[in-house]
Picture 1 (cartoon, rainbow, N blue to C red):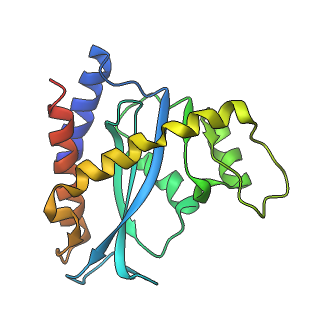
Picture 2: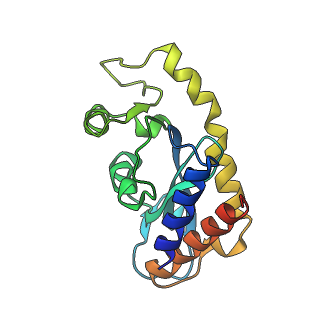
Length: 182
């Protein structure tokens, strides 16, 4: 239900020109899970949940999902497109160093998405050059989205037992961000 509302809001804003998906940013943040339950993964920081988001060049959410915290971001990037709200995929997806993977580059290239991420120090084949990495400087937009999201105190710590309830609160917070654009 909330996902349908998010999709309709995002598509309406795209038609009005307030949402621009051509250059999108992806990142994840960690939320402690004090309530226990399903969809929680143990990490060094304790048990918790990852909130993964794709935002546009204005910092508005295009995809919001929650996953167990013990999964690596490279495996979660493809899953985030299952929660993508627009029909048009981004031309450029800018991610952090954790998104650097040759397999992920190839998978996204088949979908017409150019992944821009700085290389890890262990990467053998260098595929990024300085021109594309200049876009990486605007990743503060996704960090600002998470700062807005964490103003909602309910999302700082996951107290819900069921993962679907926590995802609903994250989606509700994203709806409030999109409604401010009207």
